[in-house]
Length: 315
Image 1: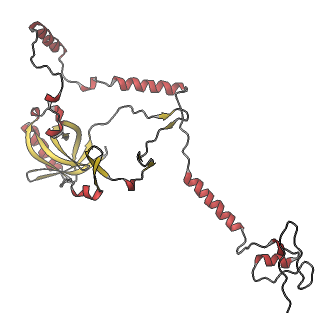
Image 2: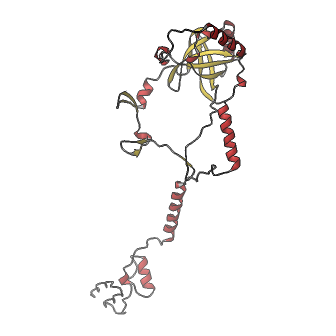
Image 3: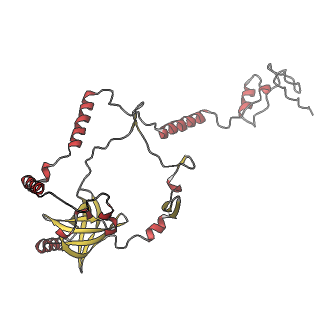
């Protein structure tokens, strides 16, 4: 099991180091929304409907809607400042009888195991609760949320059930259409009680199964085995980082192939001979010989409208 929390149980002056593990797991068959034409799972993005654009995490704050359309904002630092203290302590406040707690108070179950050198104190609390027939009512903070919790024994393990606070449970009086003045026929009541007696049996949780989940898994297996039109493969995601890297490498190779210090040469100065080629590669090279071979003679313009250079004056 994966450790989800580490801390200690505290009752009186006794300190019991423990590790916490989730006691239940979600086995629902989760279906995703798929784009039928291409088989790609639908992505949900953070977007602002007012600005009509995707929103980065850096632009997001937390807010509470105290009136319709009006929010009070909090930064992470402000939320950290009001976090409950002793976030690593399960502090037992009272011990009560288990049957006094209505099941609607319970949220989620966790297993607690001894941590480090806490086996002795762990065993002491476990046996004391078992023999007294009491369970502990505690306060605990998990992931910044403060909860009530019931600490009880299950076999040789201490379990913790997170609980709702009383003001989180809705009043039964708010439920509509509840019967007020009950009038039950005695004969029908006796028959109902007889039926209950006939259906009464010790609780055996292993005989109860999720029929919908089993049927859905069978349907999935049939579709996969048939490999029909309902079985699709999502296209591979584009690896943009690899494409950018290849483009950068290609540009680097092209840069290496180009001669170092190369400069553009005016088409009108091109002339035959190695001197002209050398002049195209270096600013310090000797000027190329004129096309006519005589010093000071203008070079003939090339076809295509290129302008000839102005001849230099001889001293």
